[in-house]
Each structure stands twice: as structure tokens, then as C-alpha cells.
Image 1 (cartoon, rainbow, N blue to C red):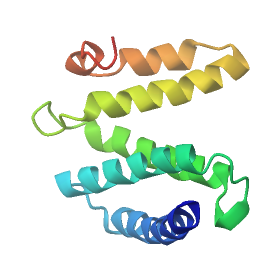
Image 2: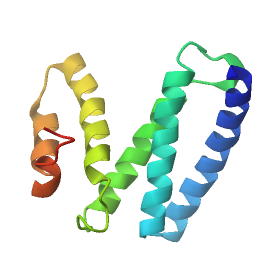
Image 3: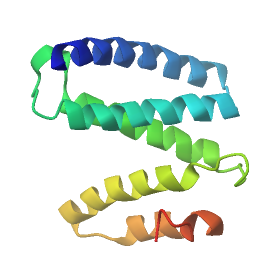
Length: 133
């Protein structure tokens, strides 16, 4: 039910903030960090869907949720830079999330330059993946 998920959300959000800070402070760059961050981003996407009608009820804030998701996506983009297809097979999935997120900003500003640049800077194998086609 929604109340139980709201409790889970509040717990996870608070723990994720601490974990994320710890990763940054310690400069941890690893496959484990990528996996954990991917799980967190997926959780925030799911939360956005399940809690979209809450509007501040039960400790949920759409703005804060979107900020956590954006921070996770930014972390992943940095972590992926040095990786290979074998190391990060889920990279195309997350490139799609970034592209969708940036598309929302583009529709507000009308400036496609940054969005197109971000897509062009992706590795070839990600750009040519089924997820991005």
C-alpha cells in the first residue's frame, strides 16, 4: 500500500543520501558503486511513478526525488567514462534516462545544443544500442 511504500521511500532516501556522500568523500570508484547507484536511480524512478499524486504527503517531495535521481545519473555518467561494454552493460539504459531528462529541459528552453552534444559524446556502442534507437 501507499503508506508502506512512503515509509520505505523515506528510509531509502535518507540512507541513500548518507551512502552517496560516503562514496564521494572516500573517492570510491568501483563496479559496486555503479551497481548500487543504478539501483538507487531505478528506485527514484519507481518512486516518481508510485508517489506522483502525493504532492508532499507522507514526506515525499517530487522536487527532492528528481534531485536525487539527477545526482545519481550525473554520478553514473562520470563513473561510466572510463568503463567498457563488458564492465557496464546497463549503460544504454541509463543513457536513455539522461536523454529523457535532458529532453524535458530542452523543451523548456528550446536549446538542443547541449542535448545533442551529450548524445554525441556517448561511446559508439551505447549510441548504437537498441535502447537509444
